[in-house]
Length: 315
Image (cartoon, rainbow, N blue to C red; front, side, top):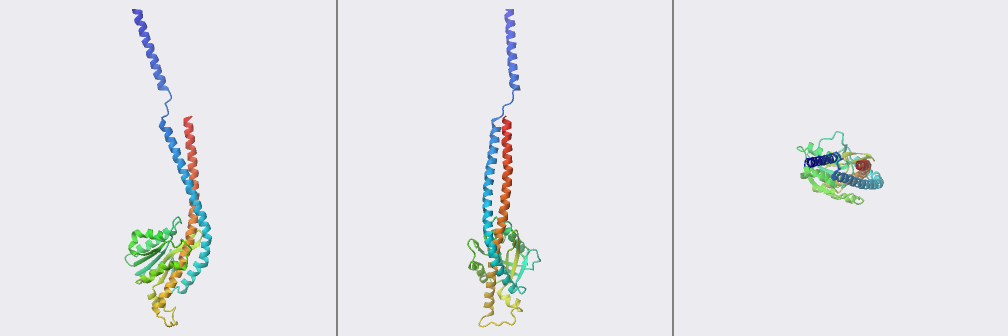
């Protein structure tokens, strides 16, 4: 009995030691890699791949827009040199200094009249740099600086300036003409803006705000000021001194003269603004294409590093 009990005790002790050693071996074994880490790595790689594909698509779109703007810019520059500049130079110099002025933004702008009709020339499409935002900021500053002193009527060419000024100055709106540059612009297309002169008669001065071409990479904002036809006789006495008008009333004559001058100036401003728009779009799309390429290269490098890190971790 004694030897039987001793054998049983030794057997229990050896079994306990084996189980304890097995437990220690299991505790010292390398921890298993959780399954969710592999899933998270795969998800991040998939997200990076999707972003790379998206940026590559955007790069193709901006590159196409850059090439399209570049191809259209040559014809726009020719129209600007052959049509816009003669229209603007001749008609603005016709009575310049006698009620008609051309002011570059940055110079000292004269005080506004109590009532002004403001014609804003913008574009219908974006992605052209500061072509529209500069016009909107300038008109906003003009209207806010003289809000309590002057009364304004707004006639806007293009949807971008209309949407930018609509929130704060909707009460000044009178006319908004869109899609002027959708087809090849003709002199008849500016008629909706000229009809404003006959619909709004109670104003002291007409102000045309538009972009002026300087070069392919630069433009500036100018204000072209014209008097109301009813004030032309008083403001331009020296220019018309010695002229005689046969079988024509002076009021009707000056009304027709101002409509013609305004139509010529607006026509030239819109053609010039189209050239500025295409040049700005060409430059902005070129910058966007380069930025998309740099971003794609950075994401490709990050993707390869992440993928290699996952492979190293598995090994």
